[in-house]
Amino acid sequence: PGKTLIYGHRGSGMNCAYSKRPGRLQLGENTVLSMEHAFNNGAVAVELDVQLTRDLVPVIYHNWIVTETNLNTPVNSLTLKQFLALNPRNRPIPYSRSDNDLAIKPMTLDAQAPLSKANSKETVQAPFATLDDLFNKLPSGVGFDIEVKYPLRDKADRVGMATSFEVNLFLDRILDVIYNHVGNPSLPELQRSKGYRPVVLTSFHPDICLLLAHKVGQDFPIMLLTNSGRSNMADKRCKSMDVAVRLSKWAGLAGIVTHVDPVLQSPRVVSLARRHKLLVATYGAPNFHAQNVQLQKTYHVDAVITDDPRAAVAAVEDKQE
Image (cartoon, rainbow, N blue to C red; front, side, top):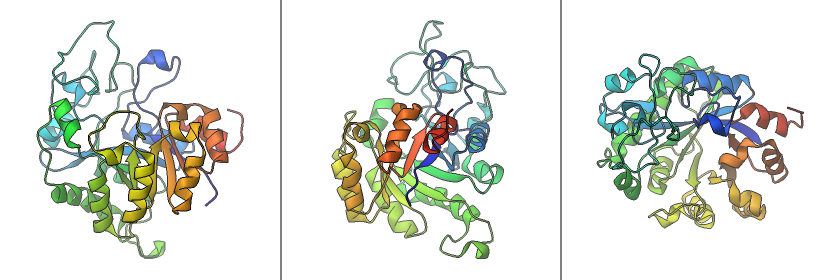
């Protein structure tokens, strides 16, 4: 209470073109290496993306399409063995694209084409990871902000994905891994056989958040992600911060994770959530800038998810970076 916590976005930051952050070391997103680096730079937690492979193993990957294949290959169409075989440390990747491109667009090897968010030659490459890997390899003090990626219907259609797994099976496979490592969170720390690791579960899919709340009860905080109207989404519950607040209050969720723009434009939106006793976290490119993190500290934002954990930690601690 009273502190603004810093989370590393996909570890030490999402992949981007070198031209956007020249001179800055870029570690491959959603890898153990990147998350270790974020923790060493002061982040109390790392934000990570979880999906299932075809053989129902939770893996850490952001895009719906595995861009390293240079094909329109969804994560859920690959087995774990196939997914890990795409490890960029094993095979150089000249160029790859983002699933922000429509699935029907052909892959381009044009050297002038914008680099994508995939692990490419512009990143320090590291192996892909499973959720189990992160629990086993990262220090127990590293908190996990686990974004559960279950596609909304319009998103799945846009990138050419087939229907995902049955939702209960999907969530249970992820929760099995979490409970196996965390133990029973309702017990005092000293009584847990697996040790303590803070965990929060989030999703852009409102029904995933509702079902998670039903399955885990008070074991873990559940927070609803919202883009706050920055892009068009078929599900109206995903497009408005006001709707996200009201839905979270009604469902007994812990809070919301919103794009930072509305908070910077009108800090009173934080008070809106506070009146309903909800936590507020933010994400988005503006969180890369220390001055925006400092502002959010004054607005009493609970957590800032950033691509530059070191600078953000210095900002909330009022240190010069």
